[in-house]
Length: 229
Image (tube, rainbow, N blue to C red; front, side):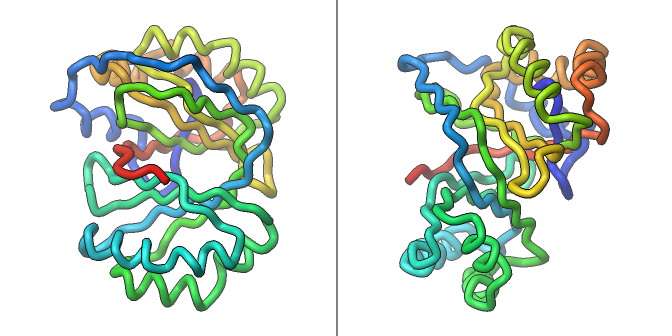
């Protein structure tokens, strides 16, 4: 997570506070790592719901609507601070079709019926790195931020993977917005919350961000994966 952030969510100094009661180091039980570097288009939606169980039933009842638009359910997460703040990650067959669906009346109506409150944050992202190996923790951090140059940031980020591992973070996925590769998304698994909290506040992380060309204040959304498809 060396350089990252999530719009419309907690800043770094707020994020660590949300995990102060979750300090047990997760046990790593990994299968052989399955690294995927073939670019994968995804639609990631984050919004609040009035009732999670009712929303989930409504969401799953509309799978045919998503499939008709080339969108496949992948992961659902619930916020650590607010479990009614939901993250929905889907895989996309056709990026242009997904753009149209994201603006459609059908999607707006489905969200309303599902009890979505407030304005949803909908992003189309091209993931260029994914680690699909199984690990024992469902705690994730998704962060978005802006960089000067995608290629330079990627080289710097990849070279500092061991630093994140040493600080309780495992890279799970990263990529950039479909239409702007200077807007980056990073997802990491949190295996040791105490180490991760300290790292997110550290001068070491600030230096790594500066060296990789991060130009915006990273914002982070902490969530637990509650369903995989």
